[in-house]
Length: 170
Ligand SMILES: [Fe+2]
Image (cartoon, rainbow, N blue to C red):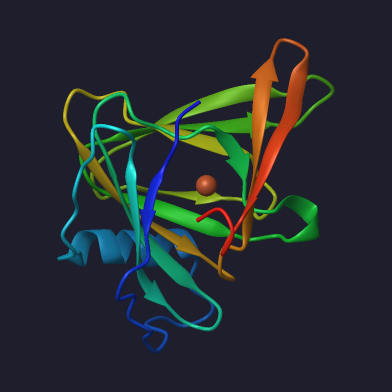
């Protein structure tokens, strides 16, 4: 299982930068293009740092060495829908999304530099740096991310593996 390094030191709280009608993926792309946040990499796992927070949105900067990634997860599911989006500031990430159905299947997209993707409010997804150079990405959650549920996926479908909560697990 892949673990995550998370830090939340000196997170600035700022006024909303964008209109509420702007999608998380669009906000993430704009921030990825403009980003001057320093990213650091650790050999143990991807690194994650909260770089911005408002009452109804938070922004994280993630840094991924080749081979680093996440497990399949959602952002709370139907009980706590959390529309999200992300964009790649440098490098590329492979985005796996679960396509619901009688037997769910995995879809795969490669998200390149300054490209973005939407994570549906109850969607299950995973990200992996399958490239051969480090990658940096910006992730926007609306509202703020309070929990994630990890899943296992095999030929029989999707299985809930664990649940982690903000304030307790990151
Ligand atoms: Fe996610």
